[in-house]
Image (cartoon, rainbow, N blue to C red; front, side, top):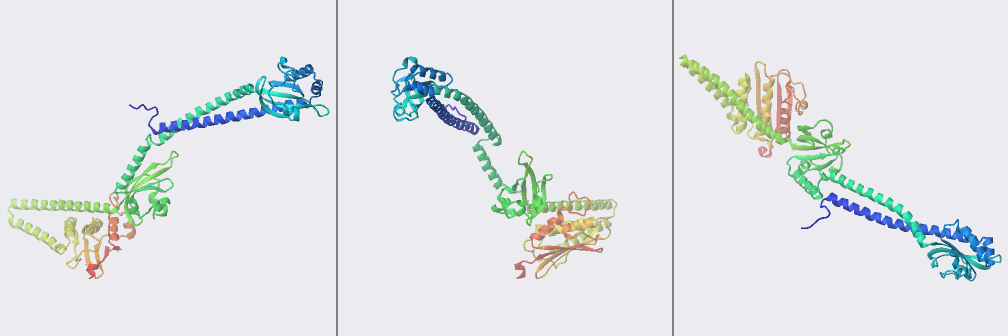
Length: 530
């Protein structure tokens, strides 16, 4: 079993690494500081020794005493000066190198030791010397003593023992060491705090966990069918999956610029206001369903947002499916209601013995049903449209609205880029809008016309309801409605217009006091032209 003295966590590694680096820096700083302190102290001591030595060598009384070789007088003078000096020793010798003054009186009259006085006595030089004398290793400054005739009559040494230097240096190093230890402790504390800060900002996760999270996030982004965009507080997109790039027609270089530079309606990506869900929008010519969720970007309150986008064709397909289901349900409801009434009438007539009248009711209903089916025979090529129109005929009959369908001369095939599902969605929406416009009106009348020429297909839905004064662009705007209850309205004509534009067609509105007509045109495909 392996014993680990250091934790495997990244933050602990970071702490120990920073601590080791700080310790290394502190050790280097200590060594350098100690060296600099030693150097500065040595230079100061050397300067002190030099000043004292040269001043004493020029004292007239000392010069006279040395010239007379009077050791008692010289010793007395040196003792007086030594009492106010911090030097460890001051020695004076004559021109023969015999001591005239020494801290140890028994050594007066003995030759000078150290072997470093010849330049002073023979050449008259003043200099700094490192040597070991009778008192031990020392740093001393040696100055020659000249008489009035500039003859060398002796020399003087002012010195400091190396032990004294080490003691002074140690006193200063203790304070420096205490300061260094304080800085080291503070630095280790800061390293620990920094490690904790990094851990918190890494969500208490290890680097490999962050990497795995990032890889997973990228996988989720690319696997998501919806387009996803993440926008920061400056309006720049910093995350976008392939679906979003494909949907909006953007490339990598665009992501480095502001979103306003490559989106035709940047207000849709505003970060203010409340979040929204499944909002229908139009971006760069694409009808999309958008959802926005704001996210905090910093502690200062700045916010970004994540936008999800999906093509509105999905919503159209869902809407068409629901519309068809609704139409089937409505058709069944109306048929059930109507036949329940007929059955009640038949039951009553039979109970009363009115057999002839009961037969007439059955025959009338049969003729009415057959008449409706005869109207739909010409739509044999379009079974889905035929089923839709049958439901609308029943619904119009219930509302006492006359619904007129095209004759045999209508479309012989579907326009290019338009499916039966889409045609049913367009026709169903226009018929429903016309019935709503005729609600509560007597003699309501709706006419559906379909025709084709050598270059286009045409379709119109006309009703004799009230005049529409709003422009077509307003009516096809998402969320716009003329109905009082707008909770579930404002999407039909928008989807209708989207389907028409996708099929390269266009829609016109003609409305006055007598009638309102929506007319659609689709280009003919090449096969039909041939």
